[in-house]
Amino acid sequence: MADVAALDPTLPDDPRVLQALVQQLRSRLAEGEQHIARLTHQLHVHLRARFGRKSERLTEGQLQLFLAELAVTGQTEVDDQAPVPPPDAPRRRGRPHGRRPLAAHLPRERVVHTVPEADRTCPGCQQAMPQIGEELSEQLEYRPACFVVLEHVRAKYACRRCGEAVVTAEKPPQPIEKGLPGPGLLAQVVTAKYADHAPLWRQVGQYRRHGVDLAPATLGDWITASAELLGPLVAHMKRVVLASDCIQTDDTKVPVLDVARESVRTGYCWAYLGDAAHPCTTFDFSPSRQQEWPRAYLAGFAGRLQADAYKGYDQLFTDGRVIEVGCLAHARRYFFDAQETDLARALTAMAFIRVCYDVERDATAAGVTPAERQALRQARAKPILDQFGEWLAVQARTVLPKSPIAEAITYARNQWTALNRYCEDGRLDIDNNAAERALRGVVLGRKNYLFVGSDEGGRRAAIHYSVVATCKRHDVDPFAYLRDVLARLPTHPASRIDELLPHHWKAARAAADSS
Image (cartoon, helix red, strand yellow):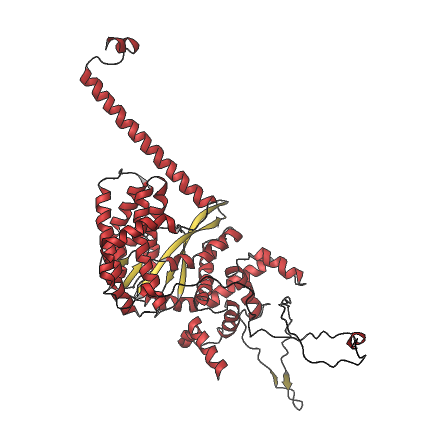
């Protein structure tokens, strides 16, 4: 001890004090190592989000051991109770190889290629050879779209005898009164920006190649006018969504140009998906992510809300009118990110979740009804979830408190009731991935147009995204839909606005085509 004191006079001589000091240093060292591990994990997550692949899919080999272990824990005993035999249902096959046949509805033009007359003489008998048939092959050609100038001619009538009466034919109402674009051009500008993610300045260059010179500000005015026309229709879509038994929702950031500050700030775009009985997808824009915005949009809604664990939704669940439904994909994402620091526990958790998703895939492949899906979940998925919950409780007592795997376990346990709720109703989804997919258009768009010009611009974008996303949901061509609806909206009765919803519009068109 004397030698140590000689080396460092600040060290105490008492062994008990030295032991306490060593323990304190060990504790600080462990905290430092844990902090370094947490920062390394965060760096890995950010690097993967920015430069790595977005898919969270794992190879079969990574989960095979853990899936085999789960299969021995009693799941095979409850499989016999399933109302259908989904495990034997055929898996979805991969994409077929080879060239796909061209669509039958595309117009065909015959281009006949004949053999020169000099080559139609038989080299053996020198007689002319008649045509005995033909070989047909198809080639897909493209012809650019063209602009057409419509000359609206309004006939005028007058009394030749007294010259007092003059009558002029009325011009049909237009999407933009006294405006330049017809419904087709207006539909093209909206579709190009909000379905194909082409900024207005890029569209200007495309139109210029066709010999039409338009200013970006002009196209911006047209976007404003179309939003005013489509506003009542989207408001009705919102009423349809709020009548759902279950709504899925998610949000994403949208840069907003702040002219006063000469900078860009962050706004948010929210997606709200109605259920199968109310098949509309609507968007809302807000200048911030405060809880007042989803609360205001969902005012009057009573049912189930499926979302991530964003705290802004919590006030909606306080009075029991809105019931929280969790997202198992969000829970899985935490474990996926924790692989770098605790591979064994992360893969075990993802194996539990994988079995639940296998139940969903088998049910979909078997084409079960919602009631049968609920029974299948209770028979196969619920026992696995119960086992998963017990495993989480055990692991929560053994992991480091602030480690990534601890954060994943804490998230799952805090959301446990909501995560299990999808088993109570076969109409509910296991996750809210549909809402995330609906926001892809917004994400792709913001990469191209960089920002919206103002909060009002964000609200106009939400209107157009609502129309485009609902069209996509029902496999409706947004251009064909907008070209027809924008022409009809100026005179369409407000009491019959329901007829213009994309799924009703599609059904009416199909009925007209079949008659």
